[in-house]
Picture (cartoon, rainbow, N blue to C red):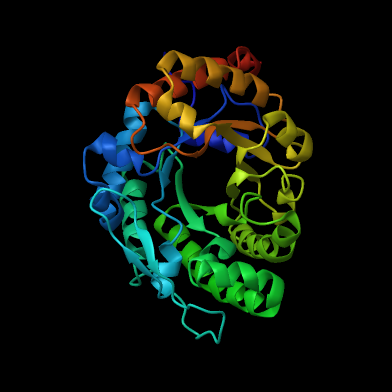
Amino acid sequence: MKELLTPRERFGLLVIDEPQDRVPVFPLVTAHAARVARIPIRDYYTDGIAMARSQLAAQEFYGTDFISFFSEVGLVAEALGSRFSYPDDDLPLLAEPKWSELGELDDATADPMKDGRLRVYLDAISYAYEARADTVPILAYVPAPFTTAQQLVDQEAFLLGLLTEPERIHRLLEYATCSIIRFCRAIIGAGGLPILVDPLASGSVISAEHYREFALPCEAEVIRYLHRYDLDIVLHICGDTNPIIHIMPESGADLLSLDHVGLETAIAAAGDRCRIIGNFDTTAIMLSKPQEVADSVAAMVLAGKPCPRGFVAATGCEVPVETPPENVRAFVRAAKEAGANADWGARRRA
């Protein structure tokens, strides 16, 4: 069936609170795109052109509404001095944080044009922008300050510091925020829309009180900066967001991408302030049969469509690398069918 709108047109209507022909569909296909393109994962996250071609191939193969660039949450921390190992067929792993203890910080900021693998992202975004930006939004996941900070210091020292050295934690967060804003500016210049991703700020890791004190102000600072460009910004927090779902809109985010929280709960807590993106279980999309995926996705979409500000049918986190392609296709097909706005064409003509 021929689509009535391009993905870019559909997203444009969503963010101005206008009805769309169907809900946008966004399984979070990131490194899984390397499997679609049949290249090693290591090539995906070290070569911007390989990353872009993989994402373009996946978007065309699955018929999703977004292109999304992401590898792992250590991207900015690596550029600032943390050391990562590069497996041949897996994502980068933190080998050694920049600091073992919370101590004196240096004044370095990451240069998106040359430090670490930030240039990989910018090359990928530029390539995709030239290829398809007229029809498909190009999203780039940016690790938020709180998540980045945990990749810069020994994790035990960081988490203990939330209790014993809050002043040093705030200094570390300011340090991370400076480079993240600089990276976001470069992403916008290359043609991408930054998505702020803060998984280590979820209720699976910290309390709601610590989220409000440490993570939320930094998220809000980055989002305020991005709003200067008149952009609608996604905040993605995977894991358990039940304890913080009512607080997350205070970040200023325009769309919330959620994981382990009931859609009814999310809509009741935040749906009148933010569009909701979510939140199909990623274990289920990898391990279920295609028809099971389709049935569950249809139920999810029916639960999400009543969101007052709008809904995007998505997975709760990244589609696992080894997910069978037929399951992702079942997700997309079912979401499009269940998310259709039957009277949209007639209402537009009227």
